[in-house]
Amino acid sequence: MRVLGIIPARYASSRFPGKALVQIQGKTMIRRVYEQAIKSQLVDKVLVATDDQRIFEEVSSFGGAVMMTSAAHRNGTERCAEVILEHPGYDYVINIQGDEPFIHPEHIDRVASLLDGDTELATLVKKITDPAVLDDPSEMKVIFNQDREAIYFSRACIPYLRDVKPEDRLKKHTFYKHIGLYGYRRDILLEITQLPPGTLETAEALEQLRWIENGYSIKIGLTTLESQMIDTPEDLAKLTQDMTL
Image 1: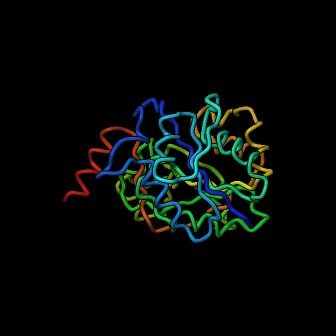
Image 2: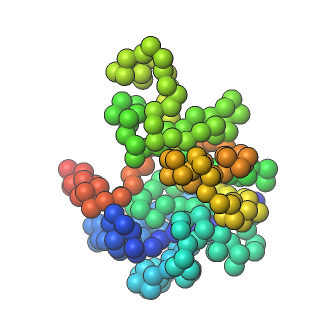
């Protein structure tokens, strides 16, 4: 299986405009993501997909592979679909988040290890150890079946534990949160980007629910490694502070 790693990166982030180009100890965020991603052992090529000339020029300046894509895309999945049409030699795409400057190459390889030709879609989850995460709507929770296929993703705490006090939930059940990497089989990627949003996606604002609602299978890989996503300037300030401690 030939795997293409794509880092979708746009300038116009609603919560943190221009974050792809912010400096983190002397390197831009997009450069740090790219340099981590190319350490993957199971991805054949990594490129940045952007709709912004400033990001294009930055990636080009450090020798990274980059492609200009349409500004009309609503999300990274659609941007990945445009790229794969221009790269016919790849069987799978891994969508690598452009706002995780210290992404673990092991995360990328774990997703890649699930891409066996039969797998339609794949992603990662991590066991929740912090009780605050259970009720944090910015942290996606996941439940899956015995075959490690996703049943549902939610911003709420799932499953609900009947007759269990909130402070005791982690003692009574193992909960998982979503790590935002996606693997798509080429044909499936082109199909899911043609689907209209469903009722579940509309309710929770989670794109992967569109795939589940339409009967696609999402394989789940487990990881013990944490991820550090930068959604806001406050997230960046905290990360920078932690790096100097």
